[in-house]
Length: 278
Ligand code: KIV
Ligand code: NA
Image (cartoon, rainbow, N blue to C red; front, side):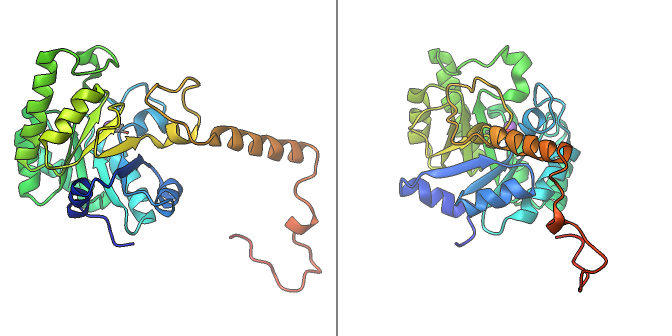
């Protein structure tokens, strides 16, 4: 497959070819996502919740995002990798925003950055785009502002909220964003935004009218997340159960002295020394 680019993603919208996006945070998960044919990997700051065990994305640092982006970009060849700019790393001076962005691009080797917010972050988006960095917007429910929003509620239900969302989307497109995530908005509004833009919309909890869909890796695979997944999530596997069962068997076999068996051990009379790893 040819490497996925922003131009390809825009063409996919024009051709009504849905864009598949999943988050990934490390080498094996990114490798498997690419092998499965994913178009875009998002190194989301949701890693704060699902990998680091925080209860929001607010504690996630620039160092965290760089560390995980490095692991993901080492694993993929053709997948387009987008990394979240974490909390408060794009709200200071444009200079500071550019310095933070440069670190994720140069050290993490991301292909693009995602920023939460609408019209208020247009100066940051413009500066990044002028620097040659593709920017993905993210509006609707924006988890970095959860304390201001006051909870995980569906956005854009009132007509004034809906109007603002459409204006924010247009402002981001105008500022040069190559795509926009719509999180937790009504299907009607997501459809309206999608039709109003020439750049693709990527929905999560935003219904079927978007140009693409994104879900969190751990939610898709039932990997040690919540026992009651959110309504907008579909769980396609239960790897948490598989992992727990596998570890349980290992523990049992160690306790029963069934592992290691003869074939796992090295003995003096072995002819050639077996490799000790891999
Ligand atoms: O961090 C994340 O996983 C995200 C997606 C849910 C869009 O921002
Ligand atoms: Na995020």
